[in-house]
Image 1 (cartoon, rainbow, N blue to C red):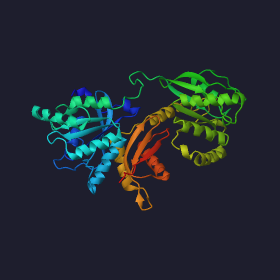
Image 2: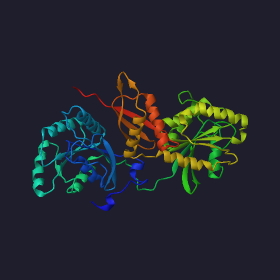
Image 3: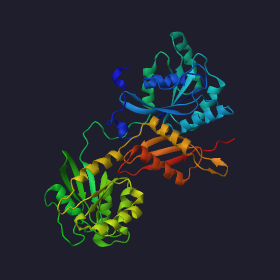
Image 4: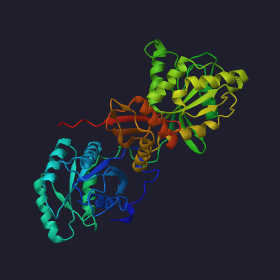
Length: 455
């Protein structure tokens, strides 16, 4: 194992911007799963004892091998015929397999194939996940020859390893990487292009004036007549020492399905511009009341999963009375996007336009935030202990395990013992924001209730 193959993921590592595959480590009690997990991690994280049953829950860890990141989920001993506490531990292992992209099945090579191992193999075949077979406790050449008998499990080549001494772990890890899904197709080593920003809003709120102010020239036509801009206009702008691509869009006056003529096509092109962007600047005329069109555009940006900054333009026209009513409108109408940074500007004079850059950077940082799997599940454990799900019909749904499936925007999947109420999911989202920020970004929380096992 080379020293440069290990290390904590850096902010620029792929996991900071894309999904990380999951490997579940399963096997009978006391076959050395936790010791093997520590060998994979290259550090002592999982608790190891000589007595069976020390690991009971599914415990996730962040791992790195040959420059590729993945999550390792350690599980308790799997006994298909278990009852009582052991049955609950087995259920946790089954859940880990359901959530995983690949499975590392650990067998004690000094014992050989047991009835429990054979029963687990049948369950693994039904799961349909790639399986790597690890023949553990192969500490010398003699036991390695005995490990060949594990071919009879029908899972392919057994990889003889010694979790205690590290023997054979490199070949096993290479096989694990072959079984796990490839990383996202983006080439993360290439320099990132300009960050893409869509400027959106109703007609005549000052979108083109804002672009001209940012560009430092009259890049687009500005007129008091609403609807001057029809086609999206791209402009490369230098802000704070970096290049941004701003897209000025036509004002969305109506719903796409009720617009006609050039308004219809302008609306379609504006929605396409939102999809092309990473972050949208929603320009609002602060001197006027928030309208249905304003809220609909904000909803469109949220639905598209883009980061969001709200710019209240024409602030020079806002007096004390208007500020009072605007504060009330924000509390009432923008409650669903309280996470979006708000900037008060006057595009015509350039007042506070420079603050837009900081808001954009904060929104993009929140949009691309990744929470380490271990930290996420520690947070969920505290959350469930302090605020358990309500009991309904004599049953109480619980969060068993959570993973962040994606960034940009952050998406979390909760594996649960039963269906969580929507109100509880919103509570989880709110607490996630309190803990990790996600400024300027929508956060999606999904659940996957455990399927009832047939008796």
